[in-house]
Amino acid sequence: MKLNLKYSLGIFKRGLFGIIQNNFEKVPDILQEVKKYSIGKSAGGLEINLFELEGGPKKILFIGGTHGNEVGTVKLARNLANWLWFEKKNFPNQSSYIVPCLNPDGFAIARKNPNYFGGGKIGRFNGNSVDLNRNFPVPSFKSESFWYRGKNYEESEKVYCGSNGSSESETQALIKLICENEIKIIYSFHNAGGDVISNSNSFAKEIGKIYAQNSGFRLLGPECNYNRDFSGWMGEWCDLQDIAYIEIEGSTRWGSDWKKQKKAIEASLKYIKNSN
Image 1 (cartoon, rainbow, N blue to C red):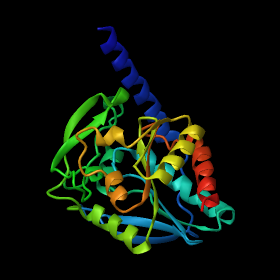
Image 2 (image 1 turned 180 degrees about the horizontal axis):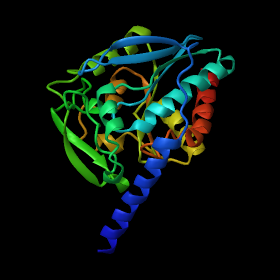
Image 3 (image 1 turned 90 degrees about the vertical axis):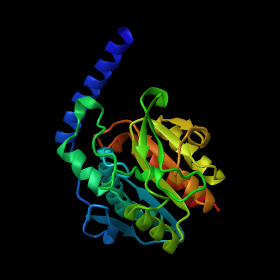
Image 4 (image 1 turned 60 degrees about the horizontal axis):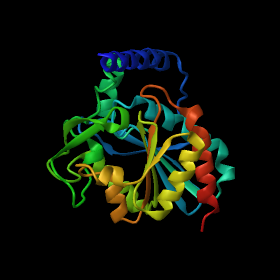
């Protein structure tokens, strides 16, 4: 009884904060000076936009909105794109690619129905009801997997991963972007676990360590996903491509989390800049 009450109060508290964040946090539009392209369309026919800051040979991709219900990640990506524009002189050897919202179908649904007091679960999937972070072409792929959530990811819910790996137009567009531009470092923003998860790539583990130290988030290794029934994960696909991949679980579903994560982003990018 006490545990159920505590859980319900936690949901209620997060919902109240969500209402405040979603309605009163000022989130900028991305500056017109940042080059904008479409990399394809979603299952529902919406544009998937890319913002590019050309620079040096170290190519880094930042992804928000893989799960449409994680609306705060889209806000974070907008803040990030503008910050990178103003800070580009400090990262002359870096080219940045920002996809603020990989899943515009789910994001549009989540914006209409934020589900504040239900954990913000509505809008996670794309227009075909596919979990895009379970849709990559990897040996582990299965059409059904699980969405783990809650404290220490103890809750689970079965999800649809698609008919096959990269069955979805969003996944196809992202893979094409990565391969054509030979991107070797990826930040994928999610929420709201307060964790940093790297894939097996040794460089990713170092980036993840710095990110965790500067954000206060818990650092987890790839085994947290590989040891579960977790199919079609982007981190596994990146392992096969020798790409350093970190997945950041922010601290809030609806807020940008920018103040909490800005320091970690800057510190990790400085580490990348100074690496061989």
